[in-house]
Length: 393
Image (cartoon, rainbow, N blue to C red; front, top):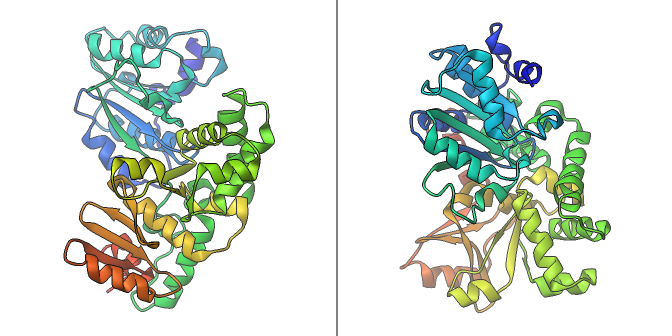
C-alpha cells in the first residue's frame, strides 16, 4: 500500500504544480470552507473536473501547509479494494509519522467505491483532527439513510462550464462591439456544451465514451440491469424531449416497459447527474401528478444522443442550468406554459421566437404578483459575463 499512496502524493517528494485552468467559482468556495470542521463533498457528473479541483486545492494548501500534512487518494484503485478508509489513512500517518492529534488534510476521490462510507466518515469526523474533502460522481453518497453525516457536510456540486468559463477555456476574448462574433461563440457553446476536456480538445470521442461509461458502468452494470438496450433508448428519448412536458406513462407505452421501470431508470440518470427533472408549479398533488420536464446536465452530451437541433430547447436548457439551485418549477395555466418559476420570479426563454398572444395575456395577469422576465440571448450574456465585463455594455 505504501507504494500506491506515495505515487498519489508526489508533493511529498518534489515541487508540485499544475497548468490546469482554475475554475474560481468552485475553487474559491472550497477554500472558503477549508477552515470549518465540516466534510466538503464535491459532487457532479463524471469528468466534470472534480479531481482537477482537488489538485488545485492541494496546490493552494501547499503555499501555507506542510506538504506531509496533505494526503490524496482515489478509492477506485483496485489495490485498495480490501482496505477500509481508516486503514488507508492510518497507513498515510505511519508513512509520514503524523501524530493522531496533528491536523491533516485528507482528500478522498471517488468515495462511493467504499460501501460503509457514511459511517467511516462520521467516525473520522468525530474522532480525529482531520479536514476531509471527498468527491463522488453519484448522488448516492448524499442519500445518508441512517443520518450518519447529518450536520457534518458542506456539499458543492460541480457543473459543466458556463458560457463565461467556456470562453476562458477557449481563450476567447471578444470585444464589446463584437456582438455578432459573441453570438457565434454562444451558438458553438450550445453545440459543444461545457465538459472541460471536450472544450479543450474538441475530441468528440471523449463525450461518446463518457455517455457509454455512465450508462453501461454506473447504471447498467452497477444496478445489474439485464435489458441494456432499453436504458439507452430511454436516455435518447429524453434527449429528444428537453424542455418539453412528458409523463412516465407515455414513456412506458413508447418503450413497452413498466412505469416502475421508467421511473427507476430515470432516477438512475438523476443519481449520475445526467439529467435534472422539474415539476409543475402548484400544490403538492399537482407536483406529483402533473407531467415533468427534463433537462440535461450538458448540452454537448444531449447533442451526442440526438444531434444538434432545436436550438430554442438548448437555450432553455442552459438557462435552467444557471438557475438550477433555485429549485425552479414550470408554470402552467389553462394550457399556457411559462418556462420557470421560483419564488416570486418567472422566466420565459425566447431565443429564436417571440412570446405569443396567449402568453402575453397570462404574463399581464401575473405581473402584479411576480417579477416576470423574458430571457433572450442578450439578457443571458449580460448576466453570465457580468454587467461590468467589457464584453457587454
